[in-house]
Length: 266
Image 1 (tube, helix red, strand yellow):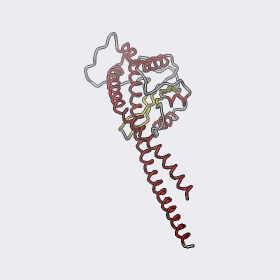
Image 2 (cartoon, rainbow, N blue to C red):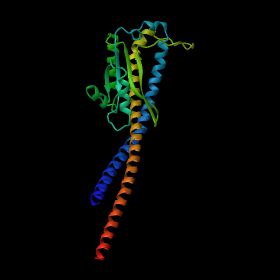
Image 3 (cartoon, helix red, strand yellow):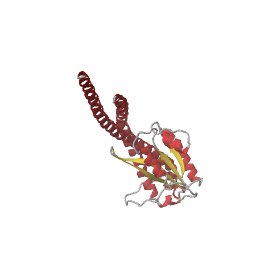
Image 4 (cartoon, rainbow, N blue to C red):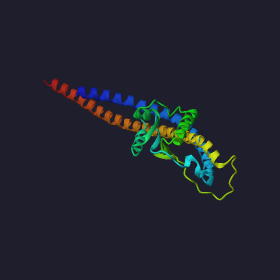
């Protein structure tokens, strides 16, 4: 009986230590959510503005001859965005599961977990900069024009709400022809195709930045929810163990009293 009480006491202390850890990690994630969602909103606005411009150009007959709308190579390249850390529920697992649906794709990984999975130098998703996005975008556009691949996608996680995030692929290149909206079209100098070809690297860079910021917001939201769930489970486990400990302690005291009473009658 004494051994049972001791093991229960050790177990309670262990789970309580884990509870404190999950609470601390949940607080850290909560502190990052506001900044992450703010940055996500800003990059979304920038990417949307660039998409408006590129959509107008894609609707132009002149741009149908752009090399960005006529792939010359073969194969698929994916920019896979995962997290720098674990303990975020199914965040990273969902990204890797979706990446597995494109088994022949050449992967460019962003985020420590993704870089480790594909054996690439670590590129942090949390500390990713606009200069890094521009560098990747320039390389992707250059390789696309050189025919090294025919399709470029960004695998990231869409932010639906604090409770819901969804891994998805945004196909970026080749550009698809857009329908004219019937409004008065702006005049581009020197011509639409030249402007489109010059704008695409900036457009791709903006999409990469927006997807990374959105993915990071999803990561911290998923981690906050995972830590909240782990904290609740730990507290329930402590309550159950405490009940078992109290019962074991009560049984031990009862047994001691019984032995004392029995001994006094000898």
